[in-house]
Image 1 (cartoon, rainbow, N blue to C red):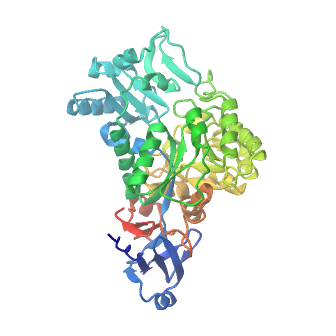
Image 2 (image 1 turned 90 degrees about the horizontal axis):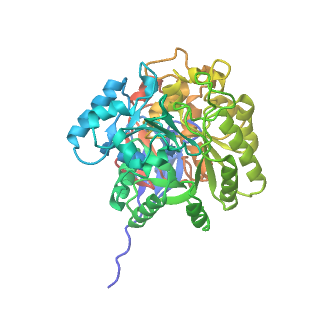
Image 3 (image 1 turned 90 degrees about the vertical axis):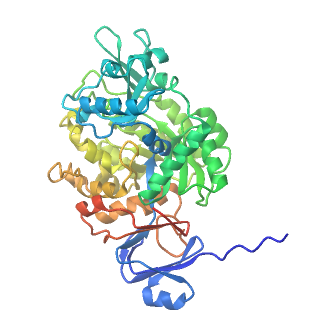
Length: 531
């Protein structure tokens, strides 16, 4: 039996909106898409005349721009949110406990698992304790992850199941918080969480796939056509490959393997794909340190509000240096989590050495780059290291960052303008589910360095603000360049037809408009899909 011929490729002419190309705003332009490629961009009258057979899509004002690229997210974590206790935004301990109580009543079986609490929002500014949970949950195990994913809060039942007690030593790169008698309080920081995670029930393969799909659909609903998934394990990798083979991925995925050496060495044997498909391994995610909120970020000098500590090395820098160099030599991209100034300096040092020995056109990345000395901020551009940052971290953390750092070091925080002044490539993401994925909130944060309530007045370290065009480029063309894919993140002839239309006039929309903006229409690989 003869197979019928495939349908003709989609042939569209999009007009009626301003076109932001990934570099500049153009008015009176039209864009022609054939198949999955942009085949023409130019003055509307000329484009209409030259492509009379294309189906015209009339856009009612607003702005047509390249599909946004989420530069740093944790897709499975986004997908799991609806199945867990949501503690994001809790203003105090009683509110957090109330949410746990309500969720537990509605879900009476199994572990109580949640995410999103942040003690820095609470009046006491202190970590919660297992006793607070014990009164609610009794013998039912409960584990609640901090908003940044770098600490967890467990009850006594969960600690017992994990075998964590007074005599349990702190693991390398982690800390078990203890009371005056040396008994664990229920808070585990960074690598100490691994002691608990071994006891948590593992998801089924079907649940892993469902989590990934839910996360990707959530990102598509925000206007993203591609995502950098930072730190996937072998199970998630298998799930992604199954979804890609089935043709069910809703947006593009550039995956970074977790720093599992066996997984890394096995997967990096194959050459990295050069063309942008639906799924590919892009690199390896490494951890230098923890997070500032839980005092796990590694600093050059002690914390101003906890002088007994300088934070943690989550991974021995020598191991990161060895395996980041292997990643580069294999043609893949190291992405190194570094938040504190000591961690960023160490990451720059090891990447500088690795780049001398590897001919890799894709630049290595430092993820977060939150606290960086002025000297080291200039080295990003000098060494060819991408600064992968999340603007909403600045506006979420501005109120307590000076307390952690002290007045002498506060100027090191979120130095975006210094990165650009040093000719570094800047790439934007959200770190969802740590923060909300909404890119328009991030754009407002980048331009104002103020939270939605307008604090602080004038912006946090306002000399580091970005222009509207710079912020948009960091979510489109610069993110694409950071991935080594110049065919993404732009509107020009020959580019991939990943497109987003919004009803607002970008890039001139102010912060209030941006925060309320939602995606209008979305095309992924030339096909319109519901955002």
